Length: 466
Image 1 (cartoon, helix red, strand yellow):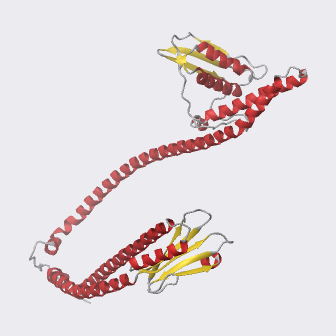
Image 2 (cartoon, rainbow, N blue to C red):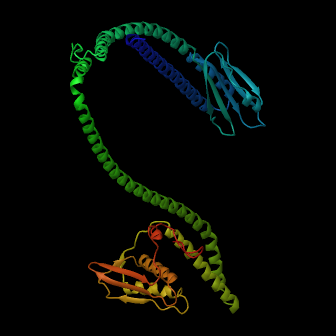
Image 3 (cartoon, one colour):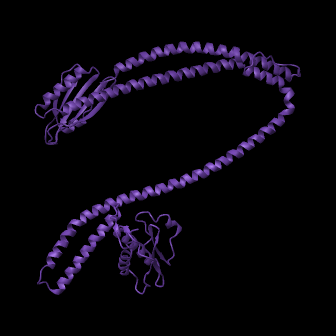
């Protein structure tokens, strides 16, 4: 098979495939668009009818629904069948109002299960839409609208369009094949045949044979290159070596660039992981906040009632001493439960600091005093190192006291009997620096990255909340 035959076959095949694909895509897009428009129109009509039915009163509902479906069937020429089924409960009668093109509306009363089992009969090409109908008046009434929309006119229009498109496409295909084949044959194939004859002469030993150069396009340049081929064989190896060197340099540059991009990608991955951990922490904190709020709400009411009854019981003067002591213990424990609930609730939500002038020594002393009740027996006392009392110290004493108390408690948990816990504070310009240090083992690198994660703790169950 000659190259001319192959080119003509390739042109015919390419043009036929292109024309066929174009015809199919155009037809598919047109069919899909028209079908979607018809379906959308059917859905809009069904929604309008459903809204109109929802505005009807329960009294004379059958008659009003019959008028409604009949008027819509007459208004919209594409509606083939329209039905509204109404039901209330298994003990109440149900009915459906049905109208079909060319027929009068019909009202059928039958059990609910019968209405639910019936399906719209499809006649020809139709599109069925079902919409719920929320009837006025309550009482458990509900309805279902079924609309069958005729697609026959659209199919006819699509078939006519496809037939004419096929005829015009065939004519266009023939003309395009002839034109493209003629151009390719004159511009490319004939000149390539001339170059092929010259190559055969060179193979047979005619080194003085040269190809005809009649243009400066790609084929002409190819002929010129063939003519220079014999003169350039000696420099071919040098050019190949130079090309290899350039290729190696480009590969090296690309490798370095890839390394830089990999490093940047690793940094982005680390940042993404940090953001994911932060987001997970925020989600867990929000969930625990909701749980704490619900828990405080559920416990607060009965706890207040118990506390009130205990206070009333303690007001009686003729209580025995033993019973009064038990009631006082119960009252204190009830108050402690309330504080625990409030502390958990406060830990899950943001607090606005109450800034006011505060004595630093007093706040730190109160924190140490509270901590002494949790010190292990025989433990060395907390060392305090406060250089001076700052003037005009303004802060939220409650929040600051809670922070120092938490740090001191954590420090006491990790030191042994001979360990040392130190609380220091000194002024640094307009600020005060407070530090809690201990002789414990410190924080591991894995835990250090999570110290600000809410509710993360390394203590055992029931020994800390993070």
